[in-house]
Image (cartoon, rainbow, N blue to C red):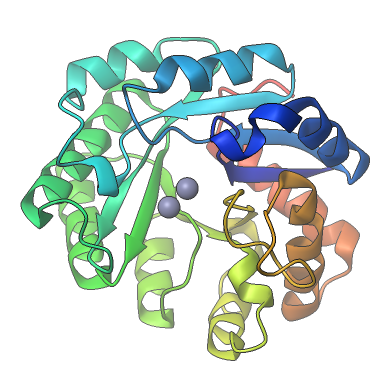
Length: 258
Ligand SMILES: [Zn+2]
Ligand SMILES: [Zn+2]
C-alpha cells in the first residue's frame, strides 16, 4: 500500500468526480489519501471530503498564497480546528517568493503561527517553499531551537543543501511528480541522497501530474508512477519503497488510523 501524502480533493477540479478519483486511487494501491487545507474559510469543505471516505484524512492551514487575505490563521484557531478526529496535520504553510501573492512578512508570520500550532498539538506541519529556501531554512532552524516540532517539506524541489538541513532538523521530504520530469536530473540526484526513512510520496493533485500524464489533471492514483520512479532513483525494489514511504508517513502522521 502507498500513501498520497498531499492532494487537494476539495478543489473544484474534483467536485463531479470524487468517488471516481478515490476509487481509482484504491485500485492503484494508494491506501491512504491526505487532502491538504489551503484556506481556513474553506476548511468545512475539506472536512466534508475527509468525513466522506474512511481512508481520506485532512489538514488545516492557510497556503502562503492566501496569507495576506485569510484573516483567521492565528494559533488558537488552528489548534481548535486541529482538534477533530480527521485533522492530522497543520498546513500547508511556508513561503512562496516565486508567485509572491501575499506580502512576504505576512507569509513569514503565518508560517510561524502554523509551527507554533504544530508544537502545541504535536501534529506535523506541512511546509511549502518556492524560491525562498534561505528564509524557509532559517525559520525552520530558528523555530526548532525554540521548541521541537515535526513536519515535512512537500513537493520537494530544492537543492541538496536544503534537504540536508531539513533532514538534520528531523523533518521529512515528500517527492512529487516533478521528480519524474525529463529535465529534473538534478532533483533526482538530490533525492537519491535523502535517507529512505525520511521520504514520502505525493501528487499535489490536481497539479503537477507525473510522467506519462504531465500536463493533464493530476489525481492520487498517479502517485504510483512517482513512487515507481523514486524506487528506481533510490535503487530499491518497488515493494521496499512502498513499505518505507508508508511506514514513514504513519510514523510522522501518528494520528492516522489505517
Ligand atoms: Zn504547496
Ligand atoms: Zn498543495
